[in-house]
Image (tube, rainbow, N blue to C red):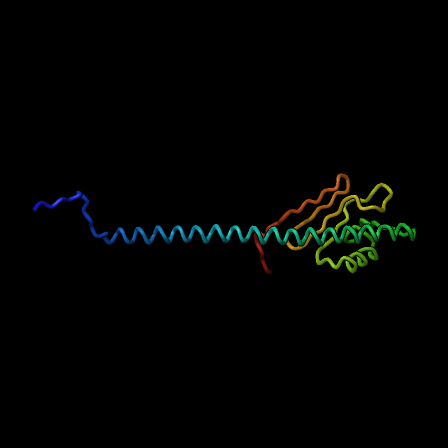
Length: 150
């Protein structure tokens, strides 16, 4: 009887083959976790940016309403010497009506001194800048690089 051999020999994996396999799997798992974490962080930033944008749009509506009321009453609307760039009464009304947790800064009024041509709204690390002509909304993020407590 003759034995036919296929020429394939089986060898047991050595101790380094198993370690290499385990390290490769661990590296792939680690890379997957890092990529998923980065993607989740990006989605959270986008969600927070959308919330800030929504609040800024509410502030714009409140500013326009306050501007119209001030114009109708013959009272001033903008006051660059005050925080927020508007009079104290207008700022408190806008904060109450919009219920926005951020800071408001009127940058520019219309030519008549009443309409809102440009303003900035800051909420946390996000700043939303509104420009009336052409109508644009720009959302920027300012990450905190260093936080020091005295």
